[in-house]
Length: 436
Image 1 (cartoon, rainbow, N blue to C red):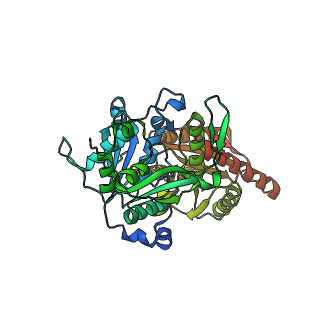
Image 2 (cartoon, rainbow, N blue to C red; image 1 turned 120 degrees about the horizontal axis):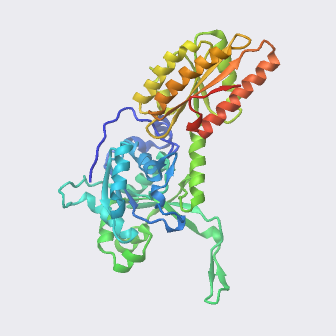
Image 3 (spheres, one colour; image 1 turned 90 degrees about the vertical axis):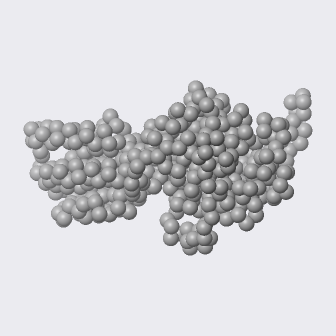
């Protein structure tokens, strides 16, 4: 089943910590020579029994977004990958189609899986042949097989896997073993152990020349289909293709247990900590912006500072999920409203909530209660509109202090609040006027 969704300017995504195109060209000369079709097969029919949850792990959510959607986006944003075939269990078909529609995945074809992992992969490979509905996809030169629950895959590593597969016929990711492997007797005693340095853990992704892996699956035995797990072994056993093994980065880990979902959320939180501070032409605003940049940087946040509207700075908009607007004029809410519109039109909040923080510093000794209540009402109204667009608007009020030491403490307090708002992304606090 195919689906499409019109969307423009979609943001990149932390599912893979992707390198810039310029970096890829410098480190991997072959990046510019992917002139052959490449496709991906994602088997996603597992029940996730080890997770201990009623929901299969690939459909568990992180920041209100299913894990499998992160994995799809990691591949979908890569220009040289043409198609992504997702293979699911029958009972998950409608759920998968809803995910495709909600997150506007464009390159995806969804198929029904089989009774085992290998049967599901074979079903996915057949999407590039004659399909019953007559909607077969263009046969790739190289097909990448990956786990739906490994969302943190890097583009440069996929490039290495793809080039090695084209040259060798097959390639696969490996990682060092972290534990010693032992064999046990039938009575439950140790029989012998393996020398850990000589062995590696087989990971995903794995790449194959399509004709090789398809031929291997055509020759599979029933035992292979029901109990086998290693695609590289099939290519070797049935086609004599010895895969090139490439050591992968630590980010290739697989979400297997419930605790892994919390780890995934932590990784995404760290990636989403990049911020853009927007200032007015006011000298005090610019000075405060650079104080924020220094203070937030000390809290491991990467911060850019720009002056004026960022509406024309599309590259900055597309790589940032946190925006801090510093002003001494509460009348800037009109500008904040335009910022919300820009983020919405850019699709920046499509994947997860974008954070927009209004930092208003008053040069008056204290704002009156009436003034603050009026400010709060306007901010809450705008925050309610923004939340419908998955944009979380917060406000921090600073009273400027001529005492340098006290002012420094105020700025530090505001930075601490900002860090918490960015890290936690708590929708319950959207629209609140916080005082630093």
